[in-house]
Length: 356
Image (cartoon, rainbow, N blue to C red; front, side, top):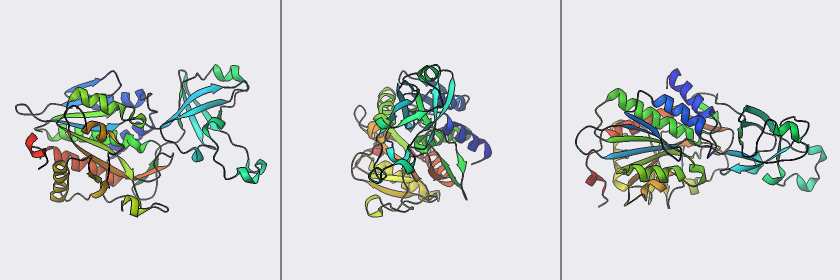
C-alpha cells in the first residue's frame, strides 16, 4: 500500500456513514472510481455501482460487494437542559459508549459532543457493574439549554464516534468503521488493478452497498438489479489472536496471515476451490473459516438472489469489531486485493461453478 492508497483509505474510513446516512462515503467512492469505471451510477437505495465492461461475447457478470455503511447513532430526543438522547444504529455494545467523544453530523456541519457518565465516586457499589442502557445515556455538547442545542442539532441527525485512523506498531492500523469501509476500499482497489492490467473477460461490477448493518438491504436490491452470475462479498471477520476469544468456536484466525475464505452453505464450493487454487498458485497467504449457516454478510443476500448466485465471502481479520478501536493489518488488505484481482482473470464458463 503506497501513500496515495493509504490516504484514500483514511479519507474513506473517516467519512461519516452510519447506515442510512452513507452519502459522504459514497461521494468519496464515486470520486475514486471516476476514470476507472466504464459506467458509474448510484441507485435509489444509495448503492454506488461501478462497472468495467468485460471482453468477448456474453461475459459472466461478477459482482464484488463491500458495504460502505458503519455503525453509529441517531438523535432521538433533546431535553429542556439541552442534553441529547440517542439510539444505536447497528449492533453496538452499550458498555463502550459512556465516556466517549462523538461527532453529531448536522446540516450546519459537525458538532462535537461527549457521552456523559456519573463519576465512579458518586455511584453505589451495586451500580458499578451494571450496564447503562442506551435510553439512559446522553450526549452533552456544552449547550446551556434546549434552545441552544436545537439551534445546532436536529432530531434524526446521525452520530459517530469521534476517532480517526491511526497507525499502531508494525503494519497495524486502528480506527472506527473498518467494518466495512475496509471492504469498500478493497473493491475500489481491485477495480483500479483491473483497469491497470486490462483485458478482463468478465463483466465486473464493483458495488459499494448500503445498510448492511440493518439487514443486508443494499446488497439485496443491487444484486437483484445486476443479476450477477458470481457474487463475492468482501467484509471483516473475527481475528482470534487476542485474549478472551474462543478458538474452539471461531477457529484460529490471525492478523497478517492473509484474507479469510469462508467455507459452508453460504459459499459456492467450486468458487471456494478456485479462490484457494488461485491463492496457492500465486503464493498468496490465506486462512479458512467454517460457516455452518448463512453468514451475516452481503454474501447471504447475494447468494439467494433471483434463481441463485455462485457466492463467496472473502474477509479481512479484524480485532475489536464494532468498537471505536478496530485493528487490522495493512498486509491483509494488500493480499486480499491481490487475490481477488488474480481470481478475475481465471474465471471461465458459468458451468464451472455448478456444484457436482
